Image (cartoon, rainbow, N blue to C red; front, side, top):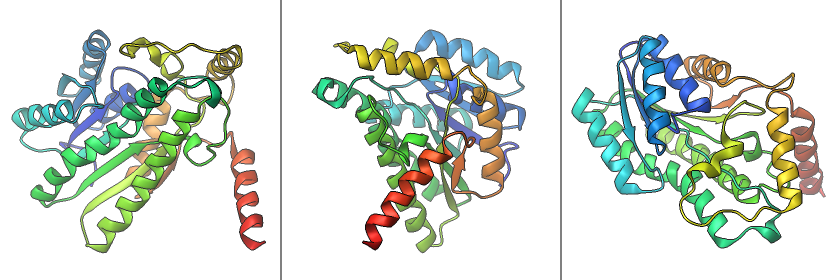
Length: 273
């Protein structure tokens, strides 16, 4: 469907892949709605996307709140009259072994990562249906959504596996009804984003991080700037290319292929008995 003149809503847009998507969409001629819970960073992101050539609307949004996502849609329709592209991208993580994760940790991560996608679909899918034309939904999961057994990010992995499942199910259901709405799932690997410091936006109780959890966090954060890692703008560029090519599975790059193959082999071996 292309991007020129389209209206795109991007959540988690104040930094990282969300900001990269906003800039890439603006360069491709889209009108961009940036949504994020972090007001100051969102205002700075809007200036960057405007500088990339886009018409921009910035809306402070808590994707964990259905009402807040509903207000985002209302602002989008008031400004642009329609919406064509939805990027459910907002994401956070805690860093602890499961034995150290509290219920508050689980609730926060699932509220943003999983319920954020659910709220986005609940609000925007009916709009796409009413419009009746082509649309495209991109749900950001993670390589953890298909590997999932990584230590110290249990809630994050659970949420990202859920995003994969939602995306696969929705793709099949829309295809069965002959809908022009397309679905993709984005699975980034090592990308230099702010997710390792996402607790900056956590309301209320903070995480009591174990030594193992902090070691995992700092090790992965360091890897985000090492050879093989990507910058968010490159992940965004590859995402738009994959959308234009009609791909459902969007892998940002391929540094963790051995882990993925090992998991698939184990599943195949167990299934075959």
